[in-house]
Image 1: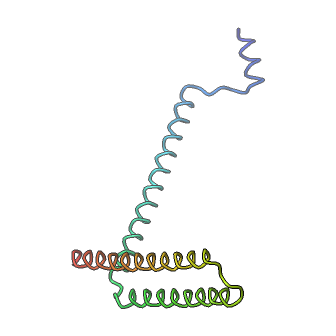
Image 2 (image 1 turned 180 degrees about the horizontal axis):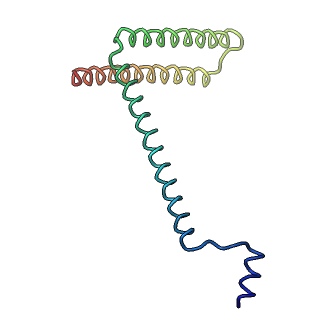
Image 3 (image 1 turned 135 degrees about the vertical axis):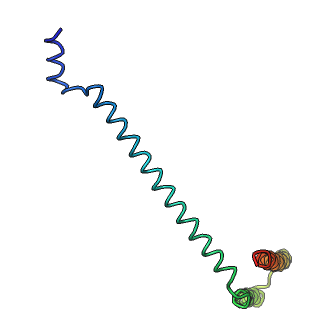
Length: 137
């Protein structure tokens, strides 16, 4: 029996004693705990950063927000003008078929609807922001 265990130990290396095994698991548990605290710490800092940015956005003047909205609207308008110009070119070049014209009409109507929806959403967003700001104060 002893010979067999010695041979096994020679080929596979020494096995851990019970105490070594216990210490190994304890070390693993400690490492796991450290990793958990690291993750919690990271989450905490991330959350505080998020709160800071939210506060900054809320305190930012509504004029700035309006400016960004107006620039977006201007960009939208120029985009629309370019599209209209392209449509006109196709009309001038080869005459559009009736179906193409109806498609075009539907598309413009759809675009106007989406623009209107975006405007209402932006207004709603602004209203909710202002109500949140008043609640915070």
